[in-house]
Amino acid sequence: MAAIGVHFGYTCACAAIFKDGRADVVANDAGDRVTPVVVSYRATEQVVGIAAKQGQVRNAANTVVKVKQVLGRSFDDPETQAHKTETKCQVVNRREKPYYEITAGEHPAYVSPEDVAKLIFHKMKETAQSALGSDVTEAVITVPFEFANAQKRALRAAAEAAGFHVLRLIHEPAAAMLAYNIGQDCSSGKSHVLVYKLGGTSLSVTALQVNGGVFRVLSTHTDNSVGGESFTEALAQHLATEFKRTFKHDVRTNARAMMKLMTGADMAKHTLSTLESANCFVDSLHDGIDFECTVSRARFELLCCALFNKSIQPIGPLLEEAGLSTKDINQVVLCGGSGRIPRLQQMIREAVPDVELLSSAPPDEVIAMGAALEAGLLVGRDNLAPEEESVTVDVSAADILVKEADDSGAEVFTVLLPSGTPLPARRHHVLSGGGKLSSLCLEIYQRGATEQPEKLATIVLRDLQPREENRNIDTVVTMKRDGSVHVSCVDQSSGRPEVVAIAAAS
Image 1 (cartoon, rainbow, N blue to C red):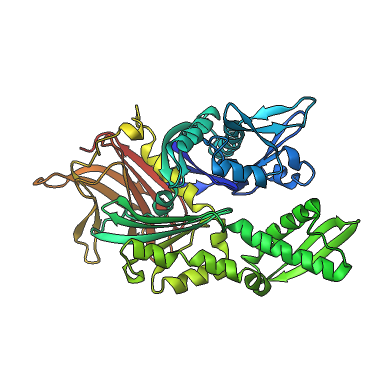
Image 2 (image 1 turned 30 degrees about the horizontal axis):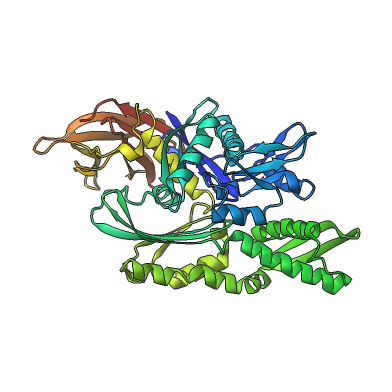
């Protein structure tokens, strides 16, 4: 069984696939794991992604960016009007809806935001299907908390027009938490999680309570005045100053030159997340003059100091609004492309001290991973009811347990899915064994209120290569709403999976 998760952001999109019990982000045809949400219209074709972004300087009037900002909105909406003033592509009013006026061909064409989004989704579907090697269309799409119903419907319609079968729309913070298995382990009791998302155009901070696999939003804050593009702009302004100091020409009033500097600054910004310095080169920036400049990470952090402070400032008021202190937070989940910036990660650690900062998964990929995991939970379920009409919650009727042996050889049962767990549900468990063992056996049981455990399935991993240290087997147990149980085991050392499906567990 396979499924797809898609995160459609304001500046980038990311696709992940669910297969053999795990979620993996997949690279597009350019080898990139995230795809710019940019569509360039030319006389005979539409170009999507990195090629469209790279050609934006030459074809700005026919290149659509940040289409998510106007999806599902009316022409008079303040967000649409803000988008109209910011974009180089002409936005016009047709039937009270925003349309892009494309002049690439002989006659002007008018393209709706939904049609632009459809091209992006089609690109993500091709990327995912290429990795899967089959025509899988079942997908979960992520949406921001602040999206109204009209925007959600527009996003779903664009995805379905691209050929996706949309199983569900889920909120971005919930997807990020799913990627880290938060709320999916066996422990009971409440915990509090802060999801910090800094994307290309906006900051979103959300405080959630987790209890038995159920997420409850306590407070959320969105700021559209700061994002990754703010940092790029600050760096581009610095490069313009350096060019003026060296060549005595001010390019700040030259829109084409500043667009070139923004492109160079964006590449340098990404490099500075992993290296201490970055070289920025812009070909023929002004009057045929090539410009080259080296920027250190320290200089970048100094330029963006005020922006970083602005990005961190909402955390305190948000927790106060939720009735929490930093000591109440158990984990912080980092997502959004700008979450890669080392200085920003350091400031979050200082703002929420002594709390685990989850950043092991690339922040710009984690939301898509969570969406793919949710899609894996839902795939195969027929006749999905619309979310608005869903009034019941399916739960597991029996405990689902795993049997293993302790150090003394005694049998030990561990409850992975207690009865009453909301479905669908996913649990992760690590099975350990001696490194010299050539095979390992995993047994899954179910247990009613008073019954003895009843064996459901046995998985045997054979022909294991001997090793000095203990062997760990990643085990993922998933229960669907219909009561079926799916178990996958992956040997951490070899990566070889074993999968079993149990049609009816309760």
